[in-house]
Image (cartoon, rainbow, N blue to C red; front, side):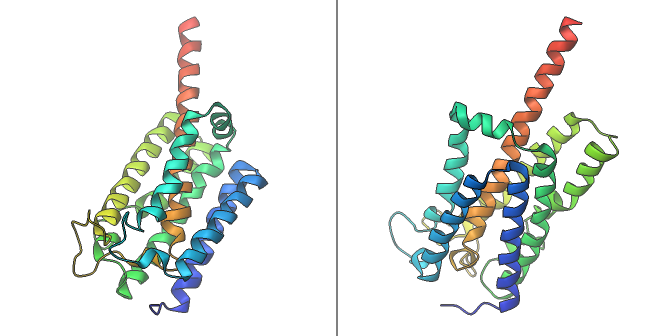
Length: 233
């Protein structure tokens, strides 16, 4: 087991808990929260016992960190009941939730300093995801408080922030020690295979993706309703 500073570990655990709190405020569903906590327990336990660190396994263990949560989120788009759940999310909380991407990026930088991920995965490299976290409270204020911007601006922001997330996910996958590795051979992405950082790809990333998809779905529905009303008028 590698040595990770207590400061970095605690910082990430708190970041994960804040993510859950924001998500609960958006959904108000205790059963969903309990389900996520159950998944966190499974992933965390496997991380502690080194399940994800095994190199050469087929399929690569890294897949079991990211794929289950992401696939589950996209499957929600195919179910009528889950679509209703997505439409009932609080748009304000879904927006402010993305501020957690600030501490995530700060923690990632410290994980890099400890030699567990490549510089590519930090804001000092090609990870621009911190921009989403920094602009989240700004877009929240301009849309919901000052009402200077309309929901269309929020929709554009969600698409752009989702693209930034896609960028770092691509880098993270191609930097991991799998047959797909294309980058960072000198310092591969191994940090997220250790506890508690396993919760980043397994829990935080799916929640962030879900928040974007729920927001985009709601905003597109509002846009369509607005256009229909204008046509009737």
